[in-house]
Length: 346
Image (cartoon, rainbow, N blue to C red):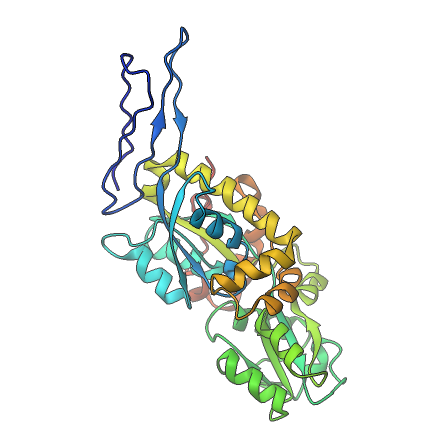
């Protein structure tokens, strides 16, 4: 990435601009100057930022930002990728040429990136809180609490990541041994949903919007038995369930602070819009390929627990969760608890 350069010339009455080739980072912003009797002030007009978002709940809050960029309504211009999994995003962030500048990933992946890159990737903001639900099929009503999962076979998504760690922790804290009292079977969300709707399986853990879609498509045979965010809060252990984070390469943070600040403002505004306008935002989410349909997205948005936390607000929100993950499996956060430098606090 190259530092933004601004060309100031008192002899020019019009706006001047200078752009840098973005072979390894955001394209430099245009700036404008106006001759006055006072010292000349620059007006930041944005930069080209390469952004990666995950499909599903992690990317839903960014829908308004992405559509705004497409329409020329944002300060920065975002060249974005909607990725299907964390591995794709991690590869782009850590590539030698830095394929992405900013990305939205699972919160445990953010800690892994920070530790494994020795601080070359940091957290800009925190996004979704808990989005996981225990679903009960076959018109069942037996599951009312985590303890009721004893003896059950639970189909779940994403082994070795946030969903598995959260499920194991909640089972353990409710007196169940995840390796003895239940059987956890991992599969992809599409397979789990199909089997749940057909009655082939009775118990599953899915995130929204996959959980939302399974309930809607089952015509009443599948119900939301346990909201795992509520179950986590019931533990009252001082930690919050934070499942996604926005990260950026350290060189972007150091060399392009105006673009980073503009992103944070635009992302916060996007999250607020999506939360307050689920019907309109649901269509944007579907159009961008973040969720399978507008109808499902509209129903899922209120269940996504979208938040925007940045600066000094990040550490108290997520540090307790990282401690829980570390106690379950140190590799979940990259082998050690991240230090305070993981958080971007301008």
